[in-house]
Structure formats: C-alpha cells, structure tokens
Length: 116
Length: 169
Image (tube, rainbow over all chains, first blue to last red; front, side, top):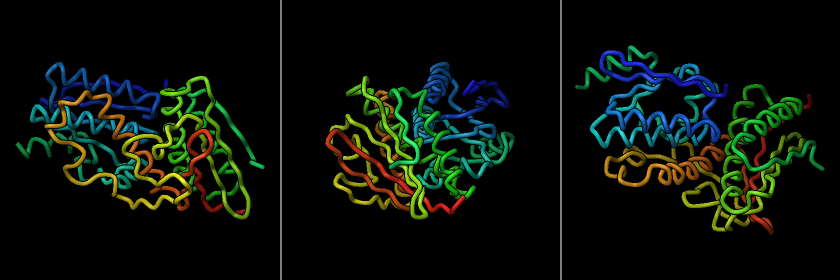
C-alpha cells in the first residue's frame, strides 16, 4: 500500500500516524482524514511523519489545508519529523515558519500543552 | 536524442512511476547519490503539474518526459500539451515565465509567516484553495531543487526542463 493512515487520542490530542508516500495520488486520502477529524470535533492534531518516505507540494498543500481548518476552530496542527529529506521541502517553501515541527510525538504534545 | 523517453496516461498513480524511472536513469547517468532525492522530488512536482493540466483539459493525451545525459549534465524535460499558456499551468505559479525564462525562485519564497494559513481563509472550499497552493508550491519546490530550471511554451503547452550535474558513471 502506498499510504497507511491511522489515528488515536493521546492526552486529549489526536495523533495521526502517516506511513508511506504522500504525493498527488495518495494525498487526497490524508486530506479526507484531516477533514473528517475536524468535522468530528478534533481540533488539536499532531501528524507524525516519521515513517513518511516521500512528501511533495500536494502533501504540503494538504497539511496547510488541515492547519487552516483547525485554526478556524482555534485549534492546532503540529508535525513530528526528523528526516532531513522531508524537512528539506518545508525549508525550501518556507513552511518551517508556519508549522511547529518536533522530534517526537511526546514533544509535540508537551509543546502544545505548554502553550495553553 | 534523449537517453530515455517516457509517456504516460495523465493519472496521478503514474507520477510515482515517472519518479522512479527518472531516479534510476539519474543514478545510471552519474548524478551524485546526495542529489537523487532532489531529482525524485523535482520530477514528481513537474509531472504532477502536467497531470493536473491534462486531467483538466485533455485527459486523453499522454504526459511526456525526456531524460537525457550529455555534457556532464542530467537533464529532465517534462512536457504537457494542454496548458492554457497563462504561465506555467495555472494561478499561483511563481517558478518562471513562459518563453524560456529561467526560474530563479529563492528558497523560502513560497510562504511567509502567516501567509499560508489564516483562520479567515477557511471559508473557501478546501479543495480549490489547496489546489491553488499546490501550483505555487510545486514550481517553488522545483526552482529550489534544480540548479538549472527553464520553463517554456511549446506549440501545445508548457515544457519544464531541469538539470543536475552528472559525472561519468
């Protein structure tokens, strides 16, 4: 399978685990999941990208779309990523200034809790 | 003559295939291993843009890629035949102008703090807002990854040519 998605609640924050390639073909599935979560009232999200092998601008657009949706409800969307090959596209596009990017899920959750 | 030419039905599922072929040919051409991820990403972006253009205007026409290694460069040309000619395939494109001007986008140009995500923007249909962002980001990504990018108009559409240094394999 090109993209695997699952999610669970941890400390009141919904953690979305993504595995595989996020590109023009698979990104719609991630978009649908983020929309579904927001529609179901999950406004504090952490997207774990540690097992993402590939991310392109379509994927970036989905993440930005998700961020916009949760912010409309005063929510948050943080990322977990330490892979340089994935972080590079965030740097090229300047989106490191838009997203909180953390090394671990626990760190992302702690950072979000500390802001409240 | 291109080392390898690929044409594929403009379906998103085939963009991955194009990425894999381009990476394999790049490796064989002697592109440094550290640059192969950039090749993969840039080719994917260009193909995604072309697929989008074809799906909107000419879904029966294939997208074409020419992969060439010559004179110490590995060059990839992605051609679509359906662009509207309005400038690199749609709104938001900031990677270059039709007519052969080289794209010289700077890293970080594509988004500024606060630009990409404002609560007030959520009123737009999510899909169309995401697509507009995709187009702009895609060309910015290509410009940030390849040190030589040319976007030019062809009789039928838009051609994006990217190249990287290649050593004899």
